[in-house]
Amino acid sequence: MTLSGAATVAAIATSHETNSDKCIVTSRSSRKGCMTSLYPPIEPYASGLLDVGDGQRIHWEECGNPGGKPAVFLHGGPGGGLVPGSARWFDPEAYRVILLDQRNCGRSTPHAGDPGVTLEANTTAHLVADLERLREHRGVERWLVFGGSWGSTLALAYALAHPARVSELVLRGIYLATAADEDWAFTGSGAARLFPEEWAAFLAPVPPARRGDLLAAYGRLLSDPDPAVHLPAARAWAGWELSAGTLLPVPPPDLDDRLLLAFARIEQHYFAHRCFLGDGLLTDLDPVRGIPCAIVNGRYDMKTPPDAAFALRDAWPEADLRIVEDAGHGASEPGTLAALIAATDRFRP
Image (tube, rainbow, N blue to C red; front, side, top):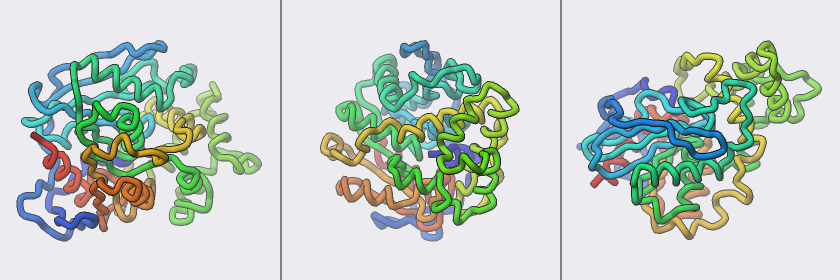
């Protein structure tokens, strides 16, 4: 749902491990042989812009072992874009890692940081189709799909549409884009009650008379061509989305206004349409129940609370759910990091 999981990926603690219980992980316990830090940084050996139609070109890159097991990394947001270190969840000797910036963000074009760029051709169905085009373009038969927060949403949507192309799923911070999720994030009855100062800053750009529908109000502000209107709104939106991303506070990332505007515009576009998911993701999971799936969620995740992870596991009992007892939403929090690395290690050839 947010940038926060990816944005804190450089703040890595390396002294914690997971236990072997199926549903509970705590970074205060240990297990011999469990890797507790990201793999070393690696540079792409191939990259490009893929024309996916609708005037859209998707930035992609590939790193690791060209002959390794294919895996695709899906960033959060929507609109978060890739950040340094996104490939470090995978053993570079074992995996051929493919990464992409989703439509209108990162190095993909056109960029939503330009307020004149339309988002009409940016929906979940478009992003799912883009993944299939990228898979075919890179000559991949099947790949492991790894996604956190919004990336988990897109990963699940893709797997449901193309189950034969998915070898495994690694999902972190489950976001199902339900009405309850919208209420939690964008009304005063959810996370706002735990973070009143941050919520007040989020409300500030919106005239009091328009606060009954914050998503619609922000849609007007972010689409205003005047930078004096859309930039303060983008900063306030990102400030709320980036707050409370980890159990213990960390400094927010340094992002320029163009990135913030793209992030805020794309998120608002998706959330105002319930992420274009129709009846939701849990109505029929039969197509994916034969796919090995690892689910990781922080107990104190304020962005994607763990009830969604449990709902997914209840609908998909074959999936492996691990709740990290001392973590929030951040992917790089020690217990979450260890559980994610353990998952990709478990699935490597």
